[in-house]
Structure formats: C-alpha cells, structure tokens
Image 1: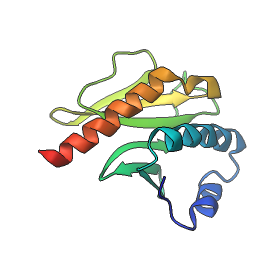
Image 2: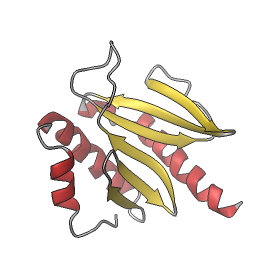
Image 3: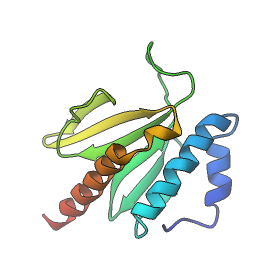
Image 4: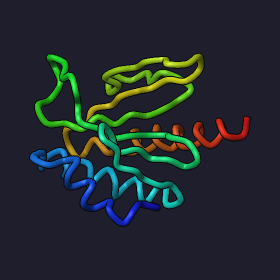
Length: 133
C-alpha cells in the first residue's frame, strides 16, 4: 500500500495517548494492506483515509461519543451505494443521493472479520466505479 515516508510518525502522532486505538488501527491496516495493495493511505488531521483513485474508507477516533459506545474504539467509515443493514453500523448517512457513509465501531481485533473486509471490498469497488461514470 502506498504511503508517505512520514506515515509511521504521522500515525504515531494521530494516536498519541491512545494505545488501544493504535493497536486496533494497526490490525485493521495490516488486513487492508493485504486486501488492497494497490491502494494508498493518507494521515489527515481528523482521519486516516484510504484511496484508490477515490476515497473508499477511513479510520478515525470518535469525536462525539454516543452513550452506548465503547470507551476505547476506532470508527471505520465505509462509503457505499447503500446503507449497511447491520447492527454493526453505528451511524448511516446519505450525504448525496445514492452515496452512503456508514460508520462501524471497532473495539476488538476480532471485529476485523470477513464481514467487515467484505464491506471494505464493496466500498473499494464502488469508489472505482465512480471514476468510470
């Protein structure tokens, strides 16, 4: 996966004081790097974004934690053509017609499973299709 030379330091700064969330992110990144080797990753101020021509997913820390959310978690944002019909989807928003932003919480490494990776693959394919229209 393509990344800048400053990626390790940027990730460390992004998760400063959040060792559990960093551990979750590193597990997620390892799976994403294996599944999407041709993608790129960019650490930004509020999220770590995954691209292949277009943004298809992101990882972030919760800004406004809802009452029932875990104290330590990572928010995985997945861009799809549909809302996720799953209790794992903590938030679903349609910012544009036919484009859904789905937020899934990760509190344990075991939640980085085939279902989540399938949604990420769907998001990757959806992002590629956007560029072909």
